[in-house]
Image 1 (spheres, rainbow, N blue to C red):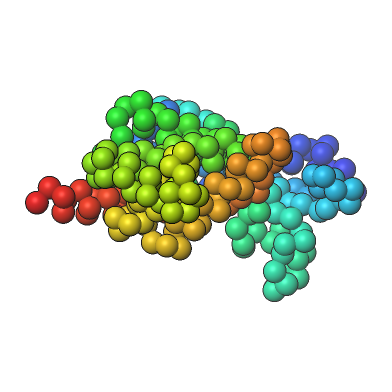
Image 2: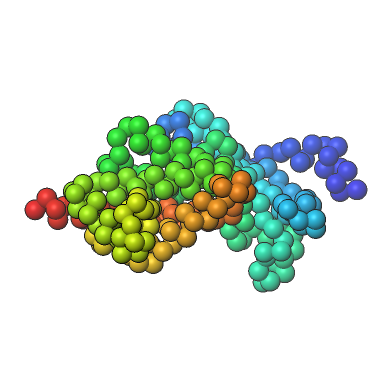
Length: 255
C-alpha cells in the first residue's frame, strides 16, 4: 500500500533540497558553488555482471546545478548489500553511512582529491594536455575504467619525459632492459619509466608497484575486451604525490 500511494502522489519524484556545496564545474573548469537536490533513495534487485545470481542494491541520485554557468549534472551512487558492514544498520534499509561501491557522474564530476590534482598538475601541462587530463578524469567518473587507465599511463609517461635529460633517460631504460631482458628492444617498457621516476625520488617503491599493478590489470582488460573494477583513486593519489615531488625536484635542479 505504501508503495502504491508513493507512486500515486508522485512522492518518488520529489527532489530534496540539500545545502549548497562547492564542487568542480566541468564547464567552468574551476570550483564553483552548486545547488544540490537529492532524489529519494530506492532499492532494487539486479543480475550481477557475468553471474547468474541476483543481488540487492540501493541507489541514490543527487542533482547538482552550478550557480555560475547553471550546468546541471547528476551523481549516481550504488551500494551492494553484500558489501555492508554488519554494524548498527545490520545491512538493512538505507545504510548510506559508508562510501558507495559504485559512483557514476553525468557529465563528469570530480572528487575533492581530483580537484586538488588539477590545481597541482596544471603548471606542468599545456592547454591541450590539461584538456586531456579532464577527459581522463571524465572517463574515470563515468565508469570507463579501461579508457581511464590508458589516460593515466600517458600522464605518468609525461612526467618521465620531463624528468632529467633525454640522454640520461635513454641510458637508464636501456640499462634496465639489458639487465632484465637481455636486450634493449624492450627499453620502452612502462615499468622502466616508473623506475626512472622512482630513481629520481619522485615515486616510492610502493607507489611504483601500485601503478604498475593498475596498468597490468588495465592491459589485460583491453586485450580481452573485458571490464575491470580497478580502483583508480590510487592512481589519482600517486599522480598528485608525483606533482608535489616534481615541483621539489624541479626547484633543486634549477639551483
